[in-house]
Length: 417
Ligand SMILES: [Fe+2]
Ligand SMILES: [Fe+2]
Ligand SMILES: [Fe+2]
Image 1: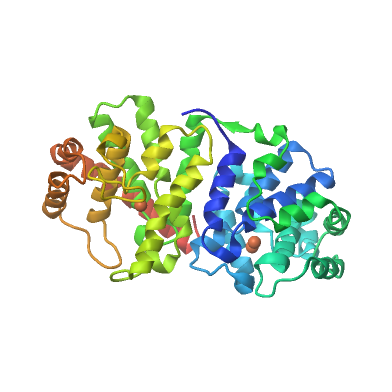
Image 2: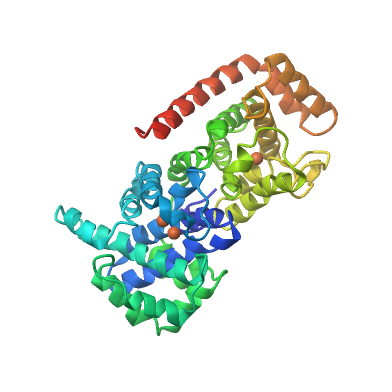
């Protein structure tokens, strides 16, 4: 594992967010990039531009943890709420502290921001308002229930009042609309963000240790979407690290395993919460939609250069040694020790925790299932033996970590955390 670019990481997360519905595909990327264009046009410089880009790429993250449909203008009704939830999800991490404040105010009118502005930090509030405008432009043009022609977007924005948007943000829009790149960016579904950013922005890198620390943030955004899976990631990561240790992996590999565990279900950002929470069996097409999370995981993590084997360990957790897993149906010779550990950690955690449609299994039942999966060639028998031999230790640590995660989730859900 090497250093990774903070921007690549944020682009990866935002692309996972954008998978959730075809109507919002690319929304976060377009808003992030348009915000950077407005910001640099207005003279905002490099360190602040990084925060602006991060905030733009993640601005609606709060809507994903609230069971809210993000299609069209549906999310206009929860403006305040998703902005506050997004702020609370992001603010605890030093990399995202400033971006979190921009997210908090990304639907606040410029008139209301005037009051807050007196307390200083004018630039962050301007950044929030820039995101607000970029968001509105993208909703008018592509995301809303009524999609506007480009000239209608321009006419509509020209009519916006400076009560709602900062006069300089409106000016940036007017001065950039004739710039070919701006509309190319707003129209395009695929344009890679990297190609448009200066070296200065791309060179903000984080070390593997910082990344592992940062990855705790992913467990929040992935798990807090559903009460029923609120502690799943934490449990899998902890079990995987312990199994890695029992299997003889060194300290560095155990750290990589923690990161992989924290990231393994990142693709679930792309699965609607009603499927994650569904009591009872899934219909066939719903099951396919849930299985997609493994493909999304691979697409997202492979887009972040530097993760190395962590991407495989994380994204192959539903592959099986006998080729009966998904998404690729890989076989034993293609699955490394790290991936095999993650498979066992994921199954063991999943069958022992309560789900909306069933209670968690007892120790005896769970071990019987693991044993039979090993016998039938689904899971690695040596790793299953490690679970059996160390079961009490493994279970004690995992349940401690999961109950800590649960109280964190409950504080968050009550609005304290
Ligand atoms: Fe929003
Ligand atoms: Fe948005
Ligand atoms: Fe999974």
